[in-house]
Image 1 (cartoon, rainbow, N blue to C red):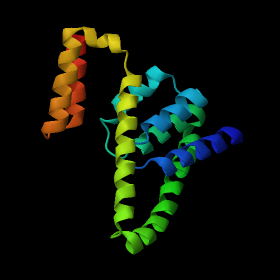
Image 2 (cartoon, one colour):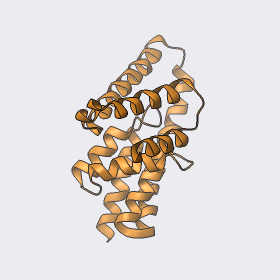
Image 3 (tube, rainbow, N blue to C red):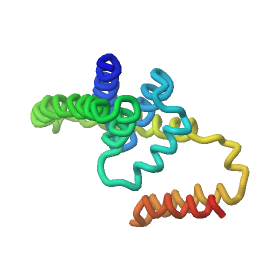
Length: 173
């Protein structure tokens, strides 16, 4: 059990350290770590958890750490995964706050941050295509759910949980 707790801590430490750019930026790394490398979750379970965690408040990475850790080792696993998930960013924020204060007005620093945002954007697009079976887009009902969900999420203030519930209702019909 101690080895799995160490693996959970280290894996989520790595995820926490490299989750740059916002709520979804860590998903490609998370998938590689917990689905492909360790097989702690199946791809289907990964997607199910992604849908479910949107309903609950709080950071997505915390919810994934809690779910994965608890699934593998109960409460000690959830604690180990969350400690790893939080330790890296806490240390980096202290370091980054110091750097940002010193260099925030330098054009090269601003340009570097801009490129990181573009890289995160491209990884999210790649992940989106990896997470679905493209053949699902051959059905009009599925296209309707994709397009309407995108429009509601991108251009309105509809709670994402309501979008997911609506999609589930359409899927059940």
